[in-house]
Amino acid sequence: MIASRSRLVLALLPLLLAGCDETDAVALRLQLDTDLSGTLTTSALELPPGPGGVGAPAGVEWNSSVSVVCNSGRFARLSDVKLFDLSCSGQANAEGLSFAQVTLPRGPDVQWAKALVPLSGEERTKAARALDPTGKSDAVGATIKIEVTLPATVIGNGLKGKTRGVKLSAEDEVATLIVPLETALTAGDPLVWHLTWEQ
Image (cartoon, rainbow, N blue to C red; front, side, top):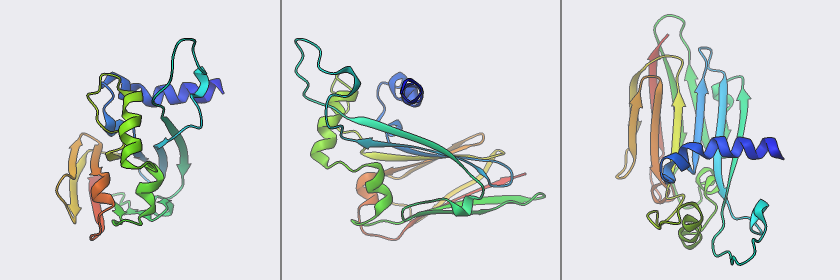
C-alpha cells in the first residue's frame, strides 16, 4: 500500500509542481526502445467511494474528491499495444528512418477516452476543486495527454485528421499530443499521429 501510494505521489509530482496542470492528470505515456519494445504508463481519473486514505479529519466536511489511478507495464512490441479502441503500430529500421503511429478513434462511443476520463462534465468540474483549491482550474480531465519518448531525437511529428484544439509539440526525444476530451467524443475521422526518428 505504501509503495503504491509512493508511485502515485511520484506520478502526480509534475501535476503538483505545475500548479495542478490538468494536462498531467489524464495521460498515456509510451517510452520506446530501439526495437519498439517499451513501457506504457497511464493515469486516469476515478471517483472514489469515500474520502480516501486520510479519512475524515475533525472539523472538515469534504465537498470534493477525485482519485488519479496510475498504472505502468512493459510491452514486447508496439503493435501489440491497444487501449480499448486506441491502437499503435510502428517499424524499426537499424539503418535509416523508423516510425511509430498512434490511431485514436473519435466519437461519442469511443472507449479509450471514456476509460481515462469516466466522469461527466459536472463531476469533472467538482473534482477540479480537489486538485486545485485556488479555483483556477474549472475542470479536470478536459484534455488527454499522449506522450511518446522515442529512442532518438524526433524528426517528424505529424497528425492526420487535425482538429481545432488538438496540440502537437516535440522536444529532443519527447513528442506530445494534447487532445481535448470534447474532440475525442465528437464524431469524426480518427486522429492518426505519426512520428519518425533516425536510429
